[in-house]
Length: 475
Image (cartoon, rainbow, N blue to C red; front, side):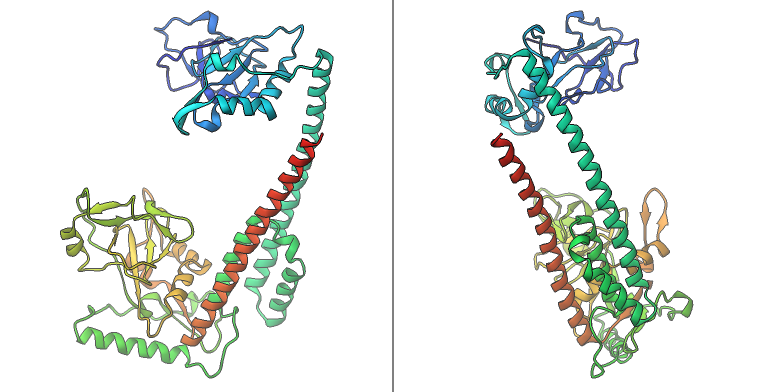
């Protein structure tokens, strides 16, 4: 048993005629990747005794916890590759031990459990296992002929697993294709009969279609698009129509302007017939996003100085999950800068934060009352809550309709971006206020269903794994 060395190497792999030092990633579970190496600088002399040879058993001994204790047999070895000091090599007596059996044993079951107990380190990001500990490994050793039969049987079963995996992938791809066609028909239906037929097809094949997570993701998108098309909940003739609601919004904004609570806004062009992507229910109204928003804007574009302590200054890099913001890790700015910058606009509860650089439209619905600012890479959308359900506005902002509007207005320079003025021009399908509330309630209900579907898929996968493990344990 021995280890190699880790000189300072080049950042590129060694050419065939050059010497290279193996990286730990060259050792994969039961697979050897000789291309994972770094070229040895020409000024350094290679250590011949560290050169890897065919049939060597290699095991990683240092690195992240999940990468320590990985074992393989070196096969199809090219010349002039050396061990690093993070890889340990076993040389065995081939007359008594089959190297493939040894590597198989150390990667699974009791062999891997022993190695796991031997690992030490202060953090999972950097652990190690020493040669002295590895020398104490216990190996269940059958006769040599049986070792060969075990490896041959494992190879046979793995080949069968590969075939089953190919069948599963093919099945999933078919389900994804069928689901995509069904959703497209649903969203592009020109008449109620076609819409009903498309929806009936999805409901009849619900269990098969939604056994694949990708389809659940697409279902979420379809729900949002149906919501902003007026096809998710029924219309009520008693609702105040959107055209009158829009008039009330304009009157309210004029009052706020006269009271100097809102800056005068530039008149936006009327929605032209050629812009309209689909027909809305009669009680709805096409308008511009800024027509119904209290304000759409961003802060000054001069980056404020970072402070050790202060107010969070978030950007899309602080976004995670479905609608989360990491305020703890966000940049902090001084209270003075916060007060100065927030005079123009600041995010508050029920506002929409709309990233307009890079990750366009990966929006956040503000559900906190803490003080913070969003960087100038984001637009803030404020709603008139007496007339607009803020969550309907958020659901609209993450719908396919808005994705299409982004494509219509975005500019591509060093990175894709869309200006605040363009966001103000986005087409907005305005329903009556009571219908907005009904839409939000229905979307919330269906999104919970999607969560449950994903949990069922995860649970099914875990159950299958548990059954397999139980079966193997009884062999």
